Length: 350
Image 1: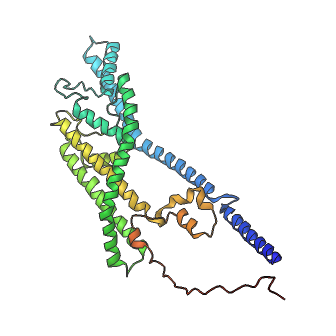
Image 2 (image 1 turned 135 degrees about the vertical axis):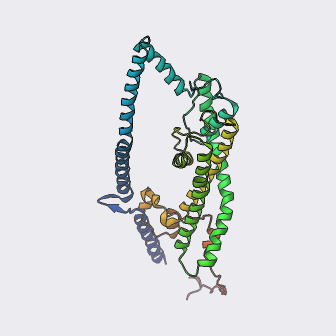
Image 3 (image 1 turned 135 degrees about the horizontal axis):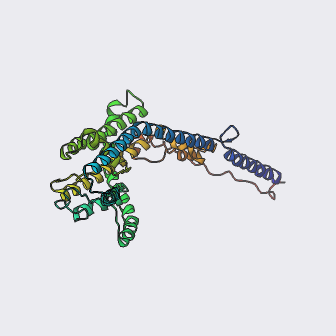
């Protein structure tokens, strides 16, 4: 009996050691961990993409910049010839003051009739660009107190905004889930679950593009006198992706009616639009086959046969569609219990 117990313990220890060794193995490519190799490729790809973007932007924008420089130089020379009483140094000082005013979003053109940039409506719009991390940069605080308050305001406002948008997304996922359930009920016997999920993603993406890009672009092109449809579509994309270049901001044209009210309405559009973008990303992330980011994580290299770890590593945990894809509960087998056999002690043996 003692020998059998030792052998059984040795077997259990050996199996446990093999399991640990098995879990310690990692997938490798060219002698390094696969995730590190793929991460290196991703860094190289991103750097190449940056170089490609630099080349394309330089090709598109530099000729226009050079032409504008030549035209401005010619205009300045002609202006000095037409006004001989004005020296070049005086003109330069005047231009510097104009540029400084423009950088502070104070327009010298009909400036007396324009609304101030720091009215309540404009300040409300500026506050929204901070807490949504869009940050157009068209106007910025210049005073020391304003800069310090901007830091504190952003530290508090950004997390609050993320919590608010996440709460909105959670509620919007309810009708989105109903839509997926409807597609499964109508198409589940014809197509695989992955194909239905992709169709569901396409429908949600189409609605987001139409309702928050194409339609608002038409509205902005109508309200903004200097914007065409492409400019308006460009503004919607730059804003809802939180790039926020600031070259186009609504309500900055001269003689814009109801500027403060207009900017407050744009804040509502930005909040709802950002919520829709988070909703679309949530639907996309819920499709495991399209979640390629998992391959760049260290945990994706672990080789294990534990089904629970495989499920967690590949992002197959509970999602918003779990009521659709949950497997049927396992059947319960009833096993009749038998009374234990009476064992004889060594003293009972003759």
